[in-house]
Length: 408
Image 1 (cartoon, rainbow, N blue to C red):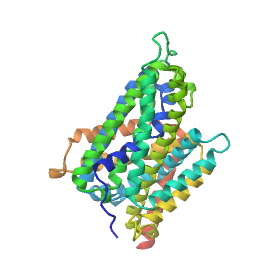
Image 2: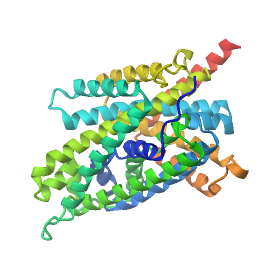
Image 3: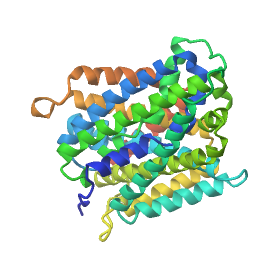
Image 4: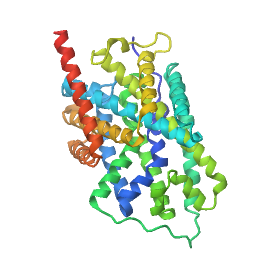
């Protein structure tokens, strides 16, 4: 059964913004300042350039292949089934780890100590239920969460630019090239959400026109928001951002606007929920596409007859995320997620590079730059995360080879 085309341009932009303006913008600045120091804005610029290259590749591919699955479907068509499988596998495992990280981040802001894990589990179950009852409900809820997040960020920016002139931020760590690249890798984790639009290509109205515009609009909006927040953090907190688990709440406190700090915490919770909702939606569509090609169990390859969403896939993913929330280490989950996401976009750039003629919307130089950027950022990740990521990718390849051998 085909999925229904119900998402308009505003819906798609909201889903993209909900994926990017999530927990990352409220929590990434401490670790990023710690490694990048005074080079934070340079790290942000590098991450934005790599994200833009990846976004244009995704947009170019989605315009020609308006189906669910994102780079899994694109790489199968442009390069071959094996490359498509690796891209889809990296996306699913990386984004499942991201879901756990988003749920735990939400709980850290919204729940008292000792209740974080139960609250994170409830959040995953509730949002998976929303997804199971139709994509238009998902888009509406995402739009509400994005507006709440932007309200909180507007308070942070206003507070940051109203700090007393006599206030002086703590001196920043020394700038190093490797530290800037590490910072770019961390900030990129917060950016990586625009492809959620492409993975829903089978549900977007006029996908050849809507998807490219939505991806570029959502990414541009996120870059503007992130740049404003980065400047505020540097001017207000400086190196003190490295010791704060909630740096944007600290900005409001330092500005003397402590009464509004709860609003920022609520916005952070809303942002985490928005990112989690969009992540669950995107993984469900990629899982559906992979199951249709037998790269995942065929049981997952069905859409609900009434609500026209991949309900079985949504439920299976939610259960896996809940298990990870029960046992996961947040830092390793983020590193592992970044590994999978960067490999996913590397393959997206390679697939877009193969396109020619009327399908080509952007110069090949952007795809080359995207591949190089992904390779560089992957090599800034912690060694343990890279080793675990490599092992899981190899495990997926072995699974598919065995399945093909059994089928033959």
